[in-house]
Length: 215
Image (cartoon, rainbow, N blue to C red; front, side):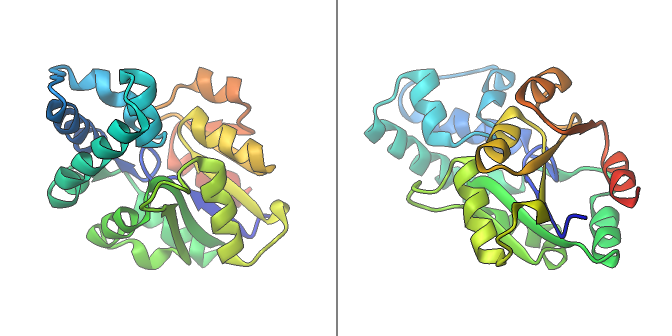
């Protein structure tokens, strides 16, 4: 039986598409690049920002660092609140805690932003630990965040953990550290990509996830 359930944030607990894409649009405009179609910028949701700016727009490491700084200018003032909780999040977090599970957040988003968002929605108290990327970007890849969270939780046995996430980045990060992962399809990843990445189970809703733990 798992002791610790780790949750991704974007696409798993919150629908953050509006805030993330508008902040990416803002950062790109700083470099004279205007992307009208926000749907095109969905690819920034999930993976570390620095890597996406470099991969998709050919930014140098210095430009990518500046882009993240500009992104955060808008994000901390407005973007982090341009999101919504997915249905039944509060109820399911409460039920899982009542059943004795320890809950933690493990996100590639900046940790201070993770804390702010969970506090904004009044669900921070459901989590025993909130883990995210460091400000300097040294810890941003999913596998590194998971290692950090495990270290801080104090349970060294990988069998005690399971991650819930919505994209291949979550599944691959979990696989890299040897952790089980459940994929959810209501976020930003498809069933196909989750299956291809190697998710152990794939569900369409958090209610199905809860039923899995009850079984």
